Amino acid sequence: MAYSRDTALSQPEATEIAAEMPGLSPALTFLFAFACGAMVGNIYYAQALIGLISTDLDMHGGMAGFIVTVTQLGYGAGLLFLVSLADLVENRRLVLLTLAGTALGLAGAALSGSAMTFLLSSFAMGFFACGAQVLVPFASHLVPAASRGRTIGNVMAGLLTGIMLARPLANLVASEFGWRAIFWISAAAMLAVLVLLRVALPQRQPHGSMRYGAILKSMWHLLVTTPALQRRAFYQGIIFASFNLFWTGIPLLLTDIFGYSQRQIALFALAGAAGALAAPVAGRLADRGYTRQGTATAMITLTIWFLIAGWAGTAISIAALVLAAIFIDSAVQTNQILSQRIIFSLDDQARGRLNAIYMTIVFLLGSAGSALAAATYYYGGWWVTSLAGAMMGVAVLLAFTTEPRPKT
Image 1 (cartoon, rainbow, N blue to C red):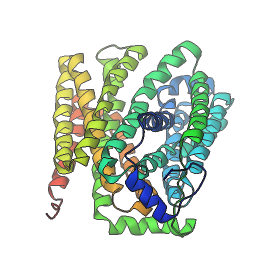
Image 2 (image 1 turned 90 degrees about the vertical axis):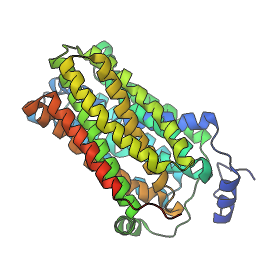
Image 3 (image 1 turned 135 degrees about the vertical axis):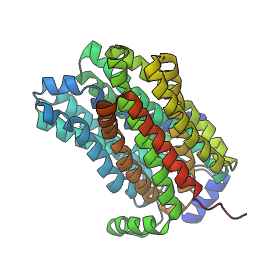
Image 4 (image 1 turned 120 degrees about the vertical axis):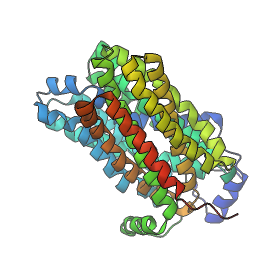
């Protein structure tokens, strides 16, 4: 039976097709991964260009901080109000609408002549960029359960790569063409991805009968009645906070102690992007039943390499710092894949809402990492920042030890 792009399927037909499908083709998997990375990267471009943007748009020091905050608020709102629509609205149409909205937000940012216009465009950009979190569960719907972890790992590798490449790419483009260029380039990329996905994506019409208001209300019920969702969101939220702590603090260390320029810091971030290679491996571990072992390994790895990073900062060892960046990113990504593999297996008809709840909690907890990095570095230096990251690893590891083992 063909999986038509133009015809909505009944529930039995969809179930039959899901059972028959061996998985996404390599080309479509790559397209999913690229689209996720390109979309989520948009919320990090301005983070690397605060100085240039605030100067050009005459933002005073206090207001400049909103350049990043407003984009993140938009993303958080999108996670809550847009991603949940994946359980109600035909998924391909929803993805294409988010891509179009992201492109408009990016164009608005590039054309901005005032601080207010830029901030409004940034909110829209962040709000629609959450379409990446519609694509991840969409991909999981298109493959059988036996290969779901591998698929999520491959797609999430693209998403993490987008996060890691966003800052260095923004710096490199801005150094050659000015800060507006990266927003124009990304807007063009969003439109190109939109065209490709319109051709390549099949339709997926959710079969629930709930209205949008009921969808939003049901999210609280899902949260309070699903212990696996609560635990996995907490684990990844704290681990993501450590990720933000590291990548907010490391430029300060590289500038103050190593004397690095912005271009050198960008190259360091490029090296750290190798941590995305852990995602497909994590997916395969999950498919083979090694979720608990993989989770514990990720938490222990995070803790150890934060301690090594603290030593490397005082020993002036750039090689050790690069390795720390790679292993910390690998640990963060591994736990993310293992967690989403669990989340997407809880309820096929509520994957959009489950992912919305999960990612909203992860994003809110994770956002504290950047603020903690600035405070710890200012008051105690790099060692204190690194110890804070290691303590986060210990905290989630201790919480994980209280998790009941599955019955056999």
